[in-house]
Length: 158
Image (cartoon, rainbow, N blue to C red):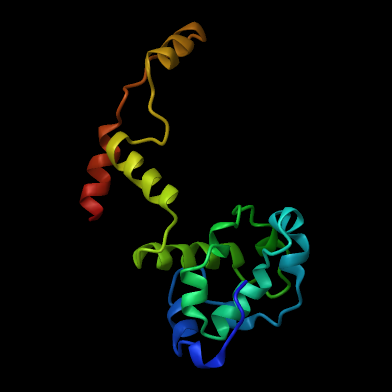
């Protein structure tokens, strides 16, 4: 994770984050480390640290978080959130941070591609003739190659 410099800190970032659904309680964090100790991502990537992400939010490190890759490493398993002694919604906070980053254009290219696929096809994986044959063999009905309902829902949202 990037080194912190107080002069780069963005005042009001923590206040903005706590306005996001799910992130309301992060100021209750007393940095016990339970979130990090139970994190399965941390086991395979020692650089990932949910406790540090929360501290960075509270210190106002907006650019380091929203432009960094750390928030995208969370597997959304909710282990940290379920174990937090302060009942902080850590996973929900990370999702809120991802939403903020995406709104500002800092989402990884794969995320943008997935959003386009969902908007255009209604799913991440395009169904083809081979998939349809497998479904028929298993006694399942055919599925349309595109799901127009998703496109309509997403257009209404915009």
